[in-house]
Image (cartoon, rainbow, N blue to C red; front, side, top):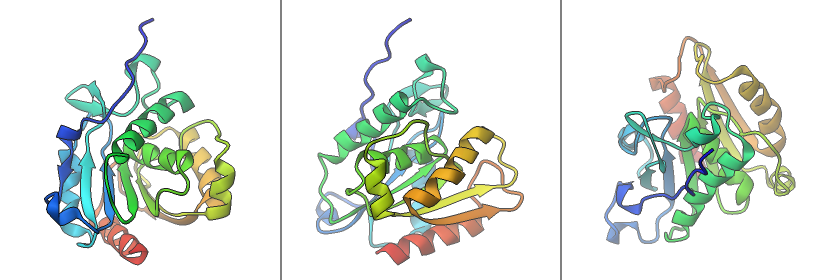
Length: 213
C-alpha cells in the first residue's frame, strides 16, 4: 500500500476577505470546506458574517474528485477518519497558521472541515477562541490535551439537519457525547435540513460569532 503524502495547506489557494495591509490588528476566522469541494465553497458566507474578523478560506490539501479533501483516500476513512488522518489534516492548518498574525483566531468548518475544526481545538486547546462545526463530527481517538479542553471549555457551535444522511450515525453519537464535556456548547438541530447550511442556521452562526468578538 502506498504511503499518503504529508498534507500541507497551499498558501496560494487561500481566499482572503481583506488585503494584507487591512488584516493588521484584526481577529481571524478560518473557513474549512467539506469533501471534494474547495476554498470558494464557503467563501460566499463572508457577506453574512460579522465584519470585524478577517476571513481566510483554506483549500484542503488532498485532490479528491472535482475538488479537495482533508482526509486521505489512502486510508479509506473519508467519512469517519482515523485519529491519525484527523491529526495530519489539523496539523497542516496549524503549520499554515504559524505563518499568520491575528489578534485571535476562530474556526468554521463544514462536514470534513468541521471535523478538522474540532480536531484543531484538541491539538491546540489554548490557541482558538471558538469553533463553528456545521454538519460535522469530532474524529475518533483521544488526546492528552482533551483534559485541557475539559478545563477551558471553548465555545463551540454545532449545527446539523434532521435530514442529513451523509455523516455516519456512530460519528454523530460520538460527537453528542464528546462536545458537552469538552466545550461550552451551542447545539442546534434544523428540521428538514440535509447536508447543507440553511438561512436560519446562517443567522444563528452570525449571532454566535458576533457574541465571541
